[in-house]
Each structure stands twice: as structure tokens, then as C-alpha cells.
Image (cartoon, rainbow, N blue to C red; front, side, top):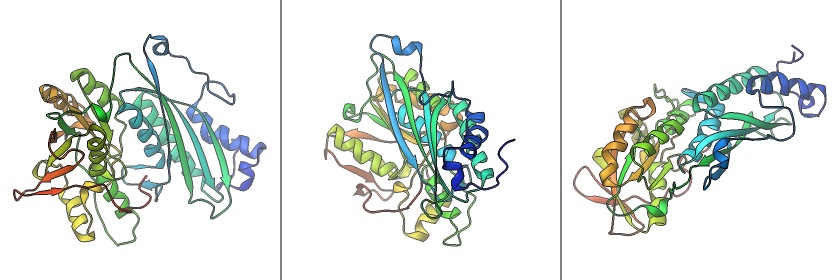
Amino acid sequence: MALRDERVTLAHGGGGKAMRDLIEEVFTSVFQPPGMEDQARLTEAALAEPGARLAFTTDSYVVTPVEFPGGDIGKIAVCGTVNDLAVGGARPLWLSAAFIIEEGTEVALLRRIVATMAREAEAAGVRIVTGDTKVVGRGACDGVFVTTSGVGVIPPGREMAAGRVRPGDVAIVNGVLGDHGATILAARGDLALTSDIESDCAALGHLMADVIAAAPGIRAARDLTRGGLASALNEIAAAAGCGLVIEETALPLRPEVVGLCEILGLDPLYLANEGRLVVFVPEAEAAAALAAMRARPEGAGACVVGRAVAEHAGQVRMRTAFGGARIVDMLVGEQLPRIC
């Protein structure tokens, strides 16, 4: 091996041999992109299909700590970008990955992150085909930041958007809520909390493909990242111009997450998730969509949480366990910093 350094130095970002050694041994030897040009050259038969459209997304990941129970920043980077494509009805195909690395970062940590990314990409059926690295001085970033962009293909005739949700449509989530946000909070160690909760981080492209096949009338989907279920539902209600009602007793929450939120004065509806989504389907297709989710491990805990209604347009309300109702608004301020 040409790379003998245990920690990243500024020389690894200087454009010379040290940089080449870092890129080749830590990144391209694992990702194995096609060719070594300054751009990826993409071919896919689906692109030539009449009416097919490209989907493109990008996101940056700055989670602290970069490694946590259930994943690391690399897993979030791949899964998050795959999920952004999948909830729009696209088949994810290609990713790019750019790294900003703080001087002094352990090379072994980078190797673990890259190995995770390669493993998750293979499982999700995507390829990491291009990328970039930059090294910055100590204190200029917090360890490692990752930016991923993704490209996918939306088949002809597939139309999914929040504005397509109609009264009577059923809202389904694919599993317990809030695990990622609770995991990151506990992993920071700031509050001397201990927990066995692990992040829900998962790529949902295969799950979405199965749901779409089972419920071709699917209206819309959202991944429940920052702002949690509550913020996603408010975005959908505003775009659709209808009201949404969720049932408190139907919400899938672990007692540990509920307890953590009660201690800290947080609302689990706003906790971040990295492997959870909500889909809206016509009532006639709800049972099929639910069965398709439950047939996959990342959807084993799927359940119906509510529906769209004609009343209180643009507003989300929750029927409480005591028979009352309350408005569920958008997240105001910052509940948890640096969760993804």
C-alpha cells in the first residue's frame, strides 16, 4: 500500500501524490467507478424509453457523531439520497459522493465510512460512479462531511406528487417512528442517557418499487427525515389543499422513544427518521400497499396512521387517545441539531 498515514493531512488535499494515494486506496478501490475521468458517463436502456424522465437529487450530511448505533454518515448519505429518488417514483441508479475531510481525521474512520457506503449502494442496487475529496484545516469542519447526488429514472406514465393527494386517501408508514433522532441524541452523550435504540437508517428503493407495483394508483410519498412525520404531513396537506387526520393510537412508537421524549420535553412526531416514509394511496389499494410493505424487512412494521379529508384544508390534525383533537403544525425552530 502506498498510503501509510494514519491520519489525513493537508497534503492529502494538495493535488499531488498524497492526494492520489488517498483517493485510490480509500475511495476508488472500493467504489470502483467506471473509468477515472472527471465525469461519469452513464448509459441505461431505460433512458431511451419514450416518456421516461430523469430524476435528480442532492443532499449534504453532517451528522454528529459520524458513527452511531445502526449506522454512520456513509450509510445515511447513500440511503438518504436513494430514498429521495424513490419517494418520487424513480428507480435509483447512480450516485456521486463528495467528501470534505478535516485535517487529522483517522484514515481508518474514512475506510469504515467508505466500506459502509459501498455495502449500502450494492444492497440498494445503485452505483457510486463519481466523486470528489477536499481536505480542510483543523476546525474548518467537524470530522467528515459527505455530499451525495443521485440520478434515477421515472418510468413513462408514473405521476407521484403531494398535490395529487385527494380526500379519502389513506396514509401508511413503513415502521416505528423517531428511532434515528432518539439514537443520535443518546449517542452524543451530552445528557448521560443510555439506550438500546438503533437508527432506522435504510434504503427504501426496493420497498417503494414493491408498493408501486401493488398499488399503481399511489398518489405521493415522503421520506420522514428532518422534521419527522409532522413536517412531512404538513407539506403534503399544503400542496394537496386538503386536510389530513392522523390517529394517535395508530402511531407506531417504541416505549423507549416515547420515554426519552417525555424526559426531554420533545414530541416524537417531529423526531427525524432515515428509513421511514409515508405513502398516500387510494382507499381501495390500501390493503395491497400495506401487504407489500410488510413483506419486506424495512416495512415489517407498516401500519395505517390516518387519511386525507375534505375539511380543514391545508391543516393536519390528530385525534388523541382521549377522544379530543389537536393541530399538528410544522416544526418551529430546531428540535435536534445535526441529525443527518
